[in-house]
Amino acid sequence: MGEKIKVLIVDDSAVIRQTLTEVLSSDPDIIVMGAASDPYIAAKRMRDEIPDVITLDVEMPRMDGITFLQKIMSQHPIPVVICSSLAGERSETALKALEYGAVEIIEKPKVGSKQFLQESKVRLCDIVKAAAMAKVTRISVQRPVQPKLTADAVIEKPKSYAMVKTTEKVVAVGASTGGTEALRIFLEALPHDAPGIVIVQHMPEHFTRKFAERLDAICQVSVKEAQDNDTVLPGQALIAPGNQHMLLKRSGARYYVEIKFAPLVSRHRPSVDVLFRSTARYAGKNAVGVIMTGMGDDGARGMLEMKEAGAYNIAQDEATSIVFGMPKEAIKRGGVDTILPLEKISRGVLQACNQ
Image 1 (cartoon, helix red, strand yellow):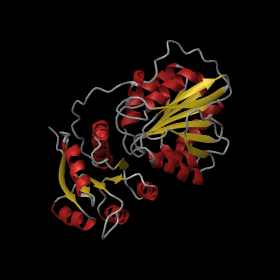
Image 2 (cartoon, rainbow, N blue to C red):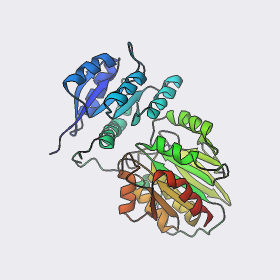
Image 3 (tube, helix red, strand yellow):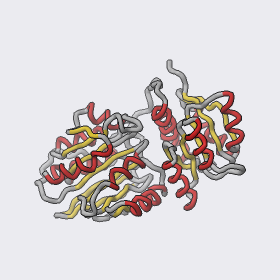
Image 4 (cartoon, one colour):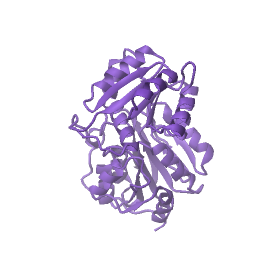
């Protein structure tokens, strides 16, 4: 049996500290070593024992979470997961924390919401495990987890892929842990007339809009949070909204997206598998797939279906991935045509689209 992942919870709300402690302690791979109401108390606790992962609120008395994060990263780097509410400025600050080295964002539990906790329980624990793997060299023992739904829960697998090849290309991208920075690097390198892009990044509800706005401000392509029936256009990237699946559809020569609320797939909503399966069905040979850093196997099955439908697929390499879970699984299943370091993926996509 491997060592448990030690987590330190830092939040000024006693209710949130208690809720997170209960949720994380329910996982046999995780132990909550302590809970602190502010960074000063957390720092004192860390003198006795160093956690594997810290969950950190962004707004606290005495010292804010961003300042504490910067101190951690400059003095003793530890994987940090930002635990934030959805209020506008707070979500903006939480996203900024990713630039300062935080690994992931989780939505602050809604007090008294049993449905939220029931559905998010595995997700919260998975994020902490991913954070531990992102920086810690030891490999935690992976125990069996509850059965995962496949993309069948949202879209039926096509019996054949009869899509004719056209000049209009669609790029479908999936990412999770470490993906926010990976997507920034990928999208910043694309020209203003790049092919239409559809993206699933595992991220809580409402954070995706702010994330898209920040990318839109720095990229040549336009970036927006997808809405139902948005047309996929050259020079534009559509990011699936948090907590909803995004499917690629086609009507005549027009590609568009469908946004729908449906069961978790591969324990995620949005799911990369759902996007990739719909891309296999409706774009086929006209698609290029990209799978990036992330824990787990979401996207691996869908990427193989894309390849079987004639798409050209790229996986991020291990050296540049924060967590080499999703790309590794896609490669293992045989769904990947080429493996590239992060900084070369944009060029690889453009070359594949021009072939």
